Structure formats: structure tokens, C-alpha cells
Amino acid sequence: MLRILKYLFGMVLIALAIRLEVNAKVGVASLDIVQSNIGFLLGSDVGLGVFLFSGILLIIALIIRKDLKPLWTAIPLVVVSVLTDLFDPLVLLIFNESLISRIIEFTISLVFMALGAALMIVSKYPPTPYDNLVVTIVEKTGHEISKVRLGLEICFVLLGALLAYIYGNFWESFNVGTFIYAVVTSYLLQFFVKKLERSKNGY
Image (cartoon, rainbow, N blue to C red; front, side):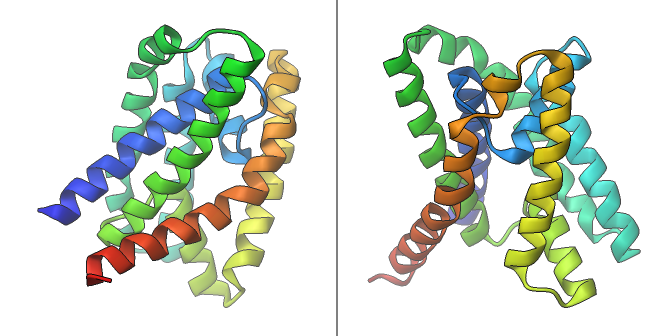
């Protein structure tokens, strides 16, 4: 039961983190640049972009693996995409457009994203489509996780920058926050995973 709660809470935190980082407008994570601008270009919101692009990543993993195991990642795909849009009114109610408010918003999103991912990892339940794709590529190619993630991150940044430019919000999507996410998230993720594993083991 505790594992299920960790898994669900992890998805909630990730969805809230995506909404916070997008609304902060100081730069978002490479994957979310793509997802948010897909939603905007289609005349919808971030959630639709999350659903569509994560769905594409899921399909790619299915093709590479040639089995149905990646289908389980549809669970966080649906939950996160729906919750991302549902959190919008709450975020708009709490935060305003001032620079200080946006910095606080972004900082919270950074922590929530790492903590949410850590909770999903320690729960041992299906990961997000992106994380599953990383693992799939590593298993099939034998490359290091860091190199695979770096390659995908570069692809996402380039694609996201193009989409953001087309939509007209380049600097809101691709800014200093993008680089902070790239540098800080992995360290925060490792920190939270270690803390959660230690608490699970009772020390």
C-alpha cells in the first residue's frame, strides 16, 4: 500500500512541477519545452502536449523493445497529463507575475520534479515514458545512461527551441531555468532517492 501511495504522490508532484515551471516563465526542462509548446501550438494547454509527446516516446519504446512491456508507462502518461492542466487554476491562484513569485514558483517546481521522480523510482512501479525509453535504449545499445540521457536532452532542446520559436514564446520556454534544470535535477534526484531508500530501510 505504501508503494502505491509513493507512486501516486510521485505522479502528482511531477504534474504540479510541470505546471509550476511552465507558469514561472523563466525556462523549463528540455522535455517540457517540447511538451508544453506542442500543446500551445495545437490551441490547447500543456496537458495535451504531455499526453501526445509522451505517447510518442511510449510508441518508440514499443518499437525498440518489440514487446508490450512499455505499455505500463501509459499509467503515468495519462495521470500526469490530466493533472498538469487541473493544477493550473491552483497555481494561478497562489502565484502572481512578479519576478520574485516566479522565482519561488520555479524553485518549488525543481524540488517537486526531483522528489516526484524519486518517489516513482523507489516505488518500483512503471516509470514515465521518457525514463522507460532511456532504459530501453541503454538495454539495446549498451551505452551508459548518462550518454543516452544527454543525447535525448540535446534532441529535446533543439526540437523544443524550434517549437517555442514558432509559437512565439522562445525566451519563456528556453531560458536560464532550462540550464538550471539540466544541471540540478539529476543531483536532487540522487539525493531524494538515497533519502527515501534509507528511510525505507530504517536508517
